[in-house]
Image 1 (cartoon, rainbow, N blue to C red):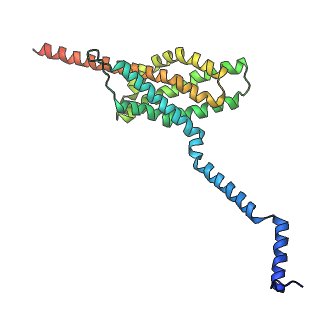
Image 2: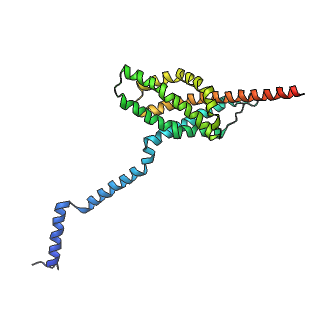
Image 3: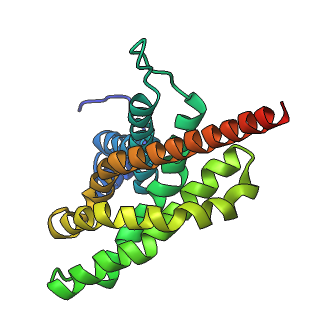
Length: 236
């Protein structure tokens, strides 16, 4: 009675389309959902680098190591006459790069390894973590920062003398600071914030290392200068 100009082939195609809709649902919203999920995946992958925990730990430690060294330079390089401070950008960059590429990632893996080995928070595990932190983490970090700074100054040949002279005093001084800091870390700080907390403590510690290193260098240079002056005086 009513004719819409649809032939037999058209009806067959229409019936197939209806069957497909019944099986898979409407293509429009489905395609929109698929495109939304793919867009979300794309967004997640683009932000994956910034959400990488190792990179995040490196960035946190690097920026705070840089800040610690700059603070140390303010304290040690201030001119008493003019009241101004001079900055050694290369030195600050060395400390920042040490935190970025070594100290931050190393802390990330270290604290997760301790947490996997001793997941229960009790007194034996707490004492073991604090002890291991000082006997395993601290020596590697101290030797690492010595080697890193000397290597970037093309003075790696001085590493054995630097280690013999400064390693034990630095380690002992570190125990006075890091044992209380690590105790708070393992008692009260959640695992995901431990690198941040210890890096904040590291601002103080990096400042101390930079300060002691700078003072030792200044004293050494002053001693060499006095020796040369004394030698010249004797020649006269």
